[in-house]
Image 1 (cartoon, rainbow, N blue to C red):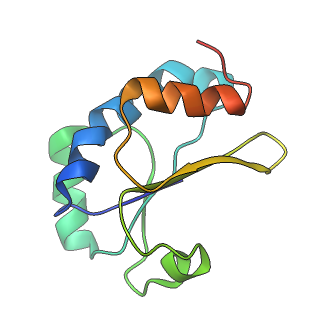
Image 2 (tube, rainbow, N blue to C red):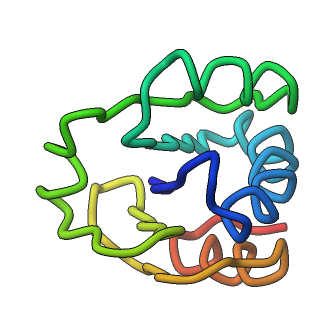
Length: 109
């Protein structure tokens, strides 16, 4: 799970890496859920322009943000196949850093 926003420069910077990882590892079962608290009218054109392949979810009422105690973005949570939280980050991640996080969930390069 990746909490982000269109106005967030670090969020925008990590999106291409997330997209590449999703395309590489989704056949192995990787699911990325990107959650924004913005309105669809702002998010949809942004996502279409950047050709983001992974699912984008909207949380304009901040219910999901509150449930996960997200106070800053980007924030990422990584769960393994059993649903156990194995890693999280409260800052921008690079592709290499995301790969390291994925290794905690048993996803190998």
